[in-house]
Every structure is written in structure tokens, then in C-alpha cells.
Length: 239
Image 1 (cartoon, helix red, strand yellow):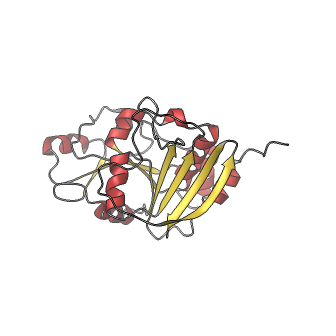
Image 2 (tube, helix red, strand yellow):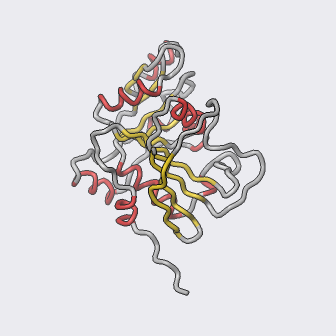
């Protein structure tokens, strides 16, 4: 039997195409093992393969802003997030800026201005926090990022999505982590889950995609299930 042809960038752009760019949308992107682990040795990178990485780049290409929690920034080493030249050209041809925006959500503001997330950013990043966050740290980070305050004692996910849309960024790609995903699920603002199912079994104590949220059932519908070798690309949409 012949092996199926590898998914191209064009295949993935078509598979993950957005129905419109004006209606605010929150897309989650995760990679997960067969037994539900979202990390290996504390990081997600060990679960994905070349197709998963290509898919992540396509999702970033389609997004107005990439949103990530501060814990994931520290663990995964975020810094200088950018799409390649071909993807930048695709964005230009569709009336978008060369690079998607990048935003980090932080309550404690324990990322210093020198962190690569800020220092290597291709454009001025966004910092989302709340009124109760340390004022001195907020002032220091305002020198390297646009600070958005959403909520009094914790970040309000709905206010955050509205604030990003008001800045011309309605298409949000959230790359985690689990606590941020939990907050978005609890607020019922998740419109899509793009999940790469890795052909691995991890065991151990690796966590789930969602943490810190009360038990709640949100029904989704299957948008696609695309085999990519032994990896399975799943796209679920709000029912």
C-alpha cells in the first residue's frame, strides 16, 4: 500500500480556513498523547512531529493574535514568535499584517522586561492583566508591551476577547497553557479546539489540557479528522 501524500501548507490552509474574519473567535491549539498527556518532561514539544509544527504555523498565519499564558511562556521558551516569509506573503495578500500579534496573560506579572517574549518580539507585544496586579511591575512592563487591564482581581476572559477585537484582533489563537484554557472554558468563550493527536502513550503524571476550571460540559462538533501518517489532526467547533 502506498503511503498517503504528506499534507502541504496549502492543504492545511484550506482545512483550517476561517468562515469570516470579523466575528470574534477563540481557537485553542494543543497536541495530546493517546492517553491524554499534553506534555513530556514538562513540555509539549516532545509530542508533536513535523506535521504538527506545520499546522501550528498555519494556525498562526490565519490568526490576528497568538495568545498564551505566562506559565507556558516560561516553560516552552516563547520568544520571537513569527511566521515564515511564505506565510507572511499569504497574510499580506489577504490584507493582514506580515506577522500576527502576540499577547501574554499574566496575573502576577513575574515576567521581566528582559524576557525573550518581549525582547525578541517581531512587533510590540500585548500584556493582559487585571487591576489587582502589582502596579510597579505593570509600569515596568508598559515600557516593552501594550498593557491591557481586564478585570478587577483576575483577568476577565470575555473582557479580554472584546479588548483584543477592539484593537483589530478578533481572530485569537490560544496556545495554552491548561490554566488559561480552563479560564476560557469556564467563561464559555472557546469556539474551536484544534487538536493534534500524537501516536504516543506517555503515562506518568502529565496534566490534561484544562486545569483550574470547575467541571462543566461543553458540546462540540467535529469539523474534520485528517490522518497525517500516524498523527491525527482534529478540529472541533462550538456546537
